[in-house]
Length: 125
Image 1 (cartoon, one colour):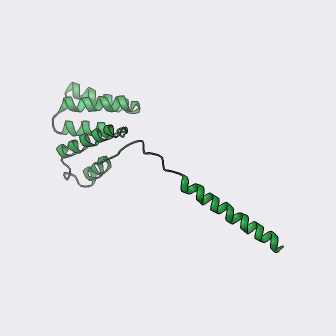
Image 2: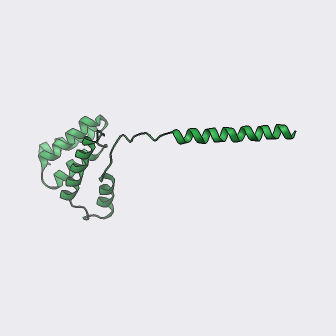
Image 3: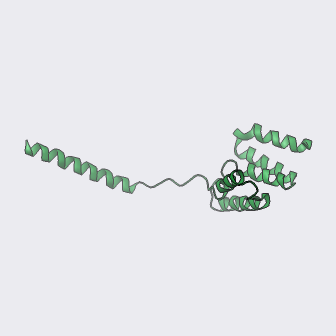
């Protein structure tokens, strides 16, 4: 009986060691998006109204977009829409419509939402 227990224990330890060895070889997948400042800007905008000016947010978002493209990563969903909103807040309606159109092109699931914004800008409302 002792031999059987040693064998089971030894087999279990060998299996555990093998699993740990294989787990150490697993690499994390490369992130699809580069989120940059986007999440922090959204958080600040809603939790501390007025703390993040539209001009500053737009500047940070543009920098994030440029860096994402330079790194070959996709711009996350919502970034172009948020940049469009910041452009609108600054009175740049053409820039806002352009960013909403880019968001709509990159993320077709946002099409109805972005189209509504673009149409409102075109109607002047």
